[in-house]
Amino acid sequence: MILTDTLLDFFLETRQHTEHICQPLEIEDYVVQPIVDVSPPKWHLGHSTWFFEEFILKPHAENYRLFSDDFAFVFNSYYETVGKRVIRSDRGNLSRPSVEKVYEYRSYVTDAINRLFADGQNRHLNDLLEIGIHHEKQHQELLITDIKYILGNNPLLPIYSENFEEHVVENHEQDWIPVVEGIYEIGHDSEDFCYDNELGRHKVYLQPFEISNKLVTNAEFIAFISAGGYNNFQLWHAEGWDWVNQNNIKSPLYWHNIDGEWFYYTLNGLQKVNPEAPVTHISYYEAFAYAQWKGYRLPTEFEWETAQKYFPWGKRWEWTESAYLPYPNYQKAEGALGEYNGKFMVNQKVLRGASVATSKKHTRHTYRNFFQPSLRWQFTGFRLAH
Ligand SMILES: [Fe+2]
Image (tube, rainbow, N blue to C red; front, side, top):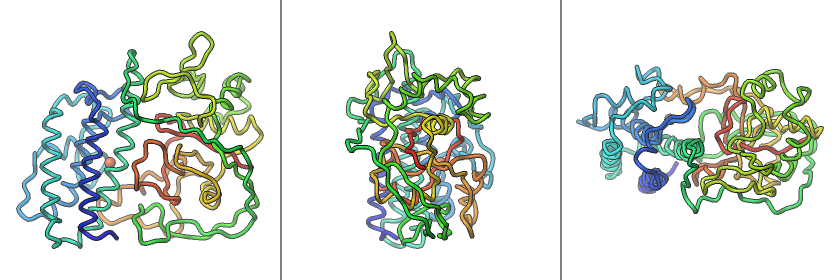
């Protein structure tokens, strides 16, 4: 638990950083929703603000007046407990409230939280404030990946920023890290913040295994493409093979073959694929097929957590072989916040690590991210195991 003063600083810094991410955008960029998984930047700005208003200010701030009676309907994401909301696929149809109004809303709520916590009277609400801050940090990552999708699917391929470094190369030689068989403890075990899905620390038995100290690179993935990996049904799950064929997938997301050479859209604009950089924007299906092709496999999330202290991580969300399931004795939080994680524990794969888009102070070796196996717009990658 962080003391209130530092927590309030953490809150203010987080609020500012979200707006800093949006600073290079043109007004028109704030409103677009090219696919259902991608939310308009304006919606992220409003939704992360609504979270503080709905779960802290409305129930706990005396005489608090809502900024707008309509905003819960517009900015509630998926909380059935809270009530009706704009359906996800309609977020891009919201030409109102205006971007200007949403920035006013942000200031209004930031000021109200500041007043509520400033005098140190409300330390019993610190846990709620902390989850609100981490929630906004999750949305900072989504903002970056959603902005990339919006700009990367604009035919003009506009540059977001010259300074965003996506392709951090791992310079070390590839090697295998052996882990002996045994019983290992999995899950969060400190007083620091974590989500409920990391709790229920428990023991697992692991067979002996080896895990790569390095992520699979673009050069290695190009070898898979050149060898016909996308045309060989034997490498794919049935569901993955259907996905490849129905969507005519021939390469990772954002890749363009121009006169026989591979380029990709990055937040710095269109660039030649860097062969040394870790491959990214691939689905679980592609990671699995590549591993099949090489005669290896993906690590389970338990193997990853056990071995992570022996390799660098944090550049790419790493697909694992594990289904997203509750740990033993998992308890979801009470009330509306119980909807944060638990209800998504079906038909998704766990990703471990963090990515170049993950906000600082939002990474942990026990962090469990999760997505449907076909999704590629996050900075996803993978390492092999056997
Ligand atoms: Fe959210």
